[in-house]
Length: 264
Image (cartoon, rainbow, N blue to C red):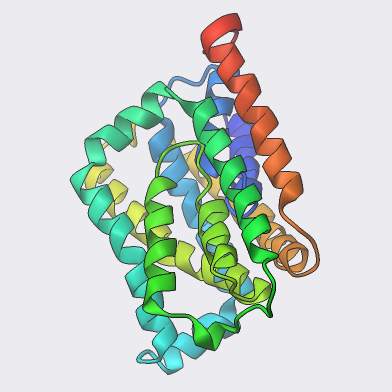
């Protein structure tokens, strides 16, 4: 992998990690387009460190509040929402690795994201006032956590499904976005720990330190602006545009995979 390719992939990671369009799916797709043969899962995990930096900067007040009062209800809700993905990732790590490598079903995964976004917007418009964050329950957190498990599949957006889950439960839109982004912290840290443990002391799966650093830096800078953009968009607009985009992308990828076979 060249540094230029790493910068592009890192920037794409920074954008798509927080936009509900699937960062992993886009990285797998771009890997096929650029014909990059190195393991994309390692690169995907490492550049997630860049997006983690962006989360810490943008949500520093929310994170600081949790650190000052670690026993507050929000901490427990974040932990409960994280638990299903942790268990699934530990039990099914090998199938997850194969899914990243093969890209089988990538188009269908994008379509799952599109469906989730559309359904969440419909359910969020039910009569009645949105629920404030303080009313969030353990059931809300568990539903969001189960949806995050589905998002382990490349092409299914983690931010998209967790945000969809929160909106479907009628949680207030600004809180739903912040909870989704806060939930990315343990998810990214967990992935980093697992990958560092696996690749520590090795050559990094064939990807040099230069591309990894370049991709991480690009992901951090672009991720910062991506989070700011999404917080404003979720408050003021709907997610239908992302639903249409991921639906069209899913159709194109599926057609290419089974018919034209230009990239797959």
